[in-house]
Length: 130
Image 1 (cartoon, rainbow, N blue to C red):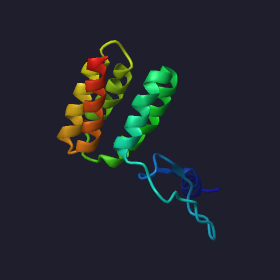
Image 2 (image 1 turned 90 degrees about the vertical axis):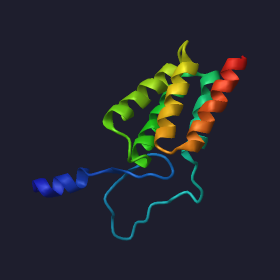
Image 3 (image 1 turned 45 degrees about the horizontal axis):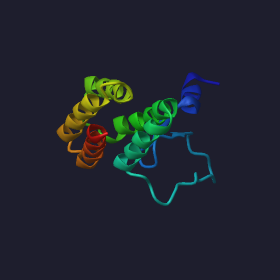
Image 4 (image 1 turned 135 degrees about the vertical axis):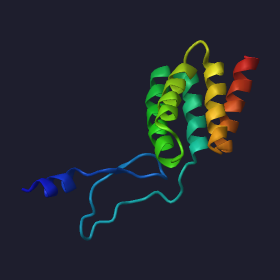
């Protein structure tokens, strides 16, 4: 097997839309199943934040998936913003979660992601009243 064919076999891409998925190279006659409706970035983050109340470990796993999708779908993010986003998602689960959510909201607004920013604002408002 040549190096080029090995590379082709191992090549995978992250596909935006229904969350991050690893896709194998196309195989003749095989069409992968795609869900009819996709969940928006904002709705997926809202689900992640709802998980935080139930189980912090599950929240961390869910936000890892959300973060991968965020990095793919928001192409204007710098490397530093991608890293900062991940750090802020972890910090939201901590004692200064509202401050972390406000900072993440600011990044969302910088990249014209108003729906995601609105989810974070609602979560901050709920956290401040609790």
